[in-house]
Length: 142
Image 1 (cartoon, helix red, strand yellow):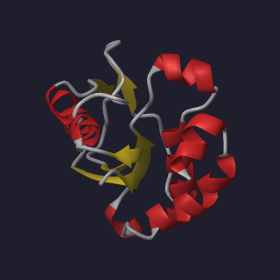
Image 2 (cartoon, one colour):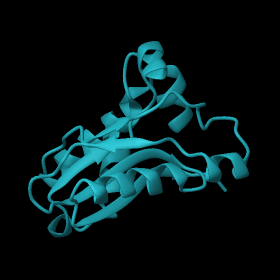
Image 3 (tube, one colour):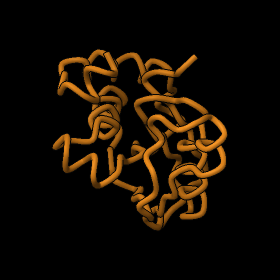
Image 4 (cartoon, one colour):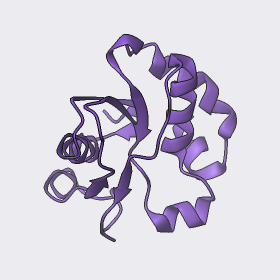
């Protein structure tokens, strides 16, 4: 399902995956939903950000706002195809929009491999004022 979404524009899976991710979250513990954005290059090539689509579906299920709180801050290599060591030691860097009140944030991604991307996203959100960050992904690699 994730391969279809990421590489073959199979957006019909977004709704069912959003329902499943939302079931893993207590809506009372979050104020806003965001996503770990893909690179600008991938966004241009695909025409959409699969993590954003998932985050918006999750937000609808939880009846919470979905906002673009994160931006990639450099043009580093993509995580796809990199070794576990490389993923853990040079994750994507994010900048987060300043949160004017201590919001509880849910950050959504498509695939969890080492957790480096979501850890980096969570650190940026905490630095921007998030009081707590919960991370969820649609799939995890073995």
